[in-house]
Image 1: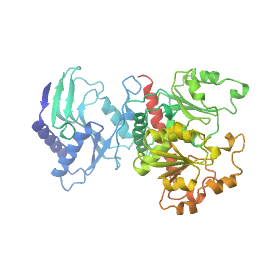
Image 2 (image 1 turned 45 degrees about the vertical axis):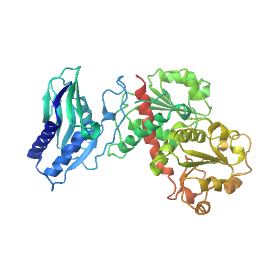
Image 3 (image 1 turned 120 degrees about the horizontal axis):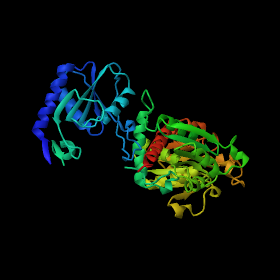
Length: 176
Length: 309
């Protein structure tokens, strides 16, 4: 097991990602945040609360999207996923959407997320933020616009993102 | 996570975890049904046949809508006007339909046990949409889901099931479902409409006094008198039944508390339920119908996903 980001580094990385978002989206008037269930939510919650501190006057819209019903591996012998809550209580029509997930790997989750998101309206543009980008392992032509850390890892290895709220500490590790 | 059963034939075969998994999934489908596009593509490669050998309005529309909202292709079959009237057997009918590459069967039949029988002869998942006087599992699931939604939980709640217990598949499925979820159940009706030994066999309370049952209950699930299943008369007249067991405003107002009123439909207005009760704020009858689609989507989704495991 190898540490990719420790608690301190993770916090600095999230701060940096938030500043990059502000650089491009200023007061988030035409921009909305959407975190992907289930694991992306811990990251998107952090990003949302950090942005609120950095921009106390901005009205930032933040929703959660579950992609279970849009997966492309339903009935492909990979087991059944239990759906999580979707809560998007604003319109995404003509807005800039920032999709947030913890690990970008094959790109198939994001493909499903794009499908699911389009059922809520037609956004003006969509950007992708990923805490960890496992490059060279993509199965679809999908790339992140904001990346916490880019890593190279074997298929047999697994990236685990630990969160204080759930796991007792903040850390990103690579497990063999 | 997945269901412990391959078919949904009855609540009798389910574990408590199965019921909770269905509820958890149904809550998410209920959210899908509030969206501008009330549809997901999950079952787009699945074809489902609705075999209705007995009449139905709600269940049939609800299943068909659930299938369409999941993106499945649907075929509807009703016994009248089909080759069943030419003498084709159930197994032949179903085998012929399945050779046209159908992936799931939803079935209602007037014979108790018909879907259980069919499940021994075909491979695809079967959902029982009501078999004779045996079970109507999706109705019980949507009833319990509606109670949970209204009261926060089913565990520890007191449910009175009122009316024709003898001929009601809704009653039997409800008893199984509510007991598995930890509720207390009382059945109430005329002695001729309550099976003997029900108390000891299923662990429910039995009373013949409607007021006593309602006074005890948090929820009353009122059933229709199933005249079509009574070969010999079991009470003198509908009017007498309505006087002794009908639920009206005056009766509810005389209780010291407000209880939730449910009915699986179709209602015989003025018999088991008066309009001043059925259409009141205490009634969640239309919420039951709304939840029916989400619960059936969950059952279809979980059974379809079970296939290749």
